[in-house]
Length: 115
Image (cartoon, rainbow, N blue to C red; front, side, top):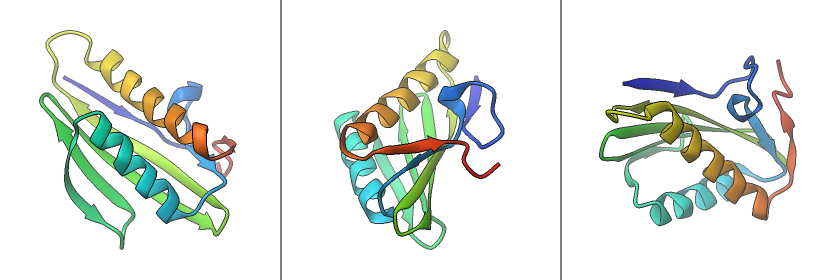
């Protein structure tokens, strides 16, 4: 079992909060599309708190999407994976896939901009 979390104060670049030039709705819609491609079941979406909860067998993910201003939105992940082997690697791969897909459409403003 492994828990992997992205946040502002993280040493590893991949696990630092990523900020994009986009609105909350733009990031959320793109994220939901990527989840669908990855065959994740979306269990809940809470726009009041900017959270999307999804799962696949052996892994759950809570994404936290926060619009800092109309042209800056961050996304962080809290992942709980229970694979017998490679739990952390699978979580890292998921995070990398999401960030890569977002960067294809929206400009990355930076990492951990609001420490």
